[in-house]
Image (cartoon, rainbow, N blue to C red; front, top):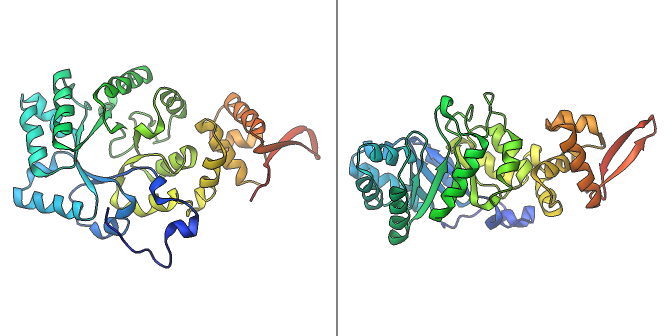
Length: 329
């Protein structure tokens, strides 16, 4: 990783946080020339994905220079999974893998967004990654609006992906973050899906493609600064980093929250809201979080058991209970 000086003082001295403990960030690159932003925060980014098979439309000299420029920042670089899907459709999967390795990519991504790969091809990708000392990442989800996976099928595909020992399993979010995977048609996160998915796989093993800044904010707020985020635009790289370190207004308390609260994502989110409010009642928590009554009630019960919040009756209306943080800093 490239060493870079930070303005004034090291970020860990300011925030009390270890930069090595933040989640992975994957940047999506359309062969943009806006690399200055990327370079400024490169020490907080894991790798860059050049999607849509774009690298293989370039002449070899330009491609090698692009990859070397990225790697010189201490970053990894990945193909987009659609490239190998296309290779599979044409009966050229092995040739496609070879071209990725020969070009110098540090990550191989395989996906099935448009076309199903065979078990043989998946095993070939795993073995190629191992023998070439590159990282394998596998993407789960469909790109087409009309053939989206159900929650059950998504969980099945995640579990199936684990058989190939990928470094990371990516949840498809496309480039618009709408009507795909865990996102509805407005780009809102289907948190009931996320809760179920995280019951079957560790958060550290997953990467959420989150192209919209509101998705990045909400995922960091609810799941903590260690959540892995992908398909982040180059222009959003700095804001994602600021949010991970609690330097943005939306999640300035998130790091303390993650240290103290060991509950579910919903419980952590309710705790975050209470931390930022003088007091809150059940109805306001439902309205702010978008969670249903039972989920909010369970979160409140868990937080009381963990001695993180206290429950008191509103002196103006004894039928109403309010909640506030214990020893709120």
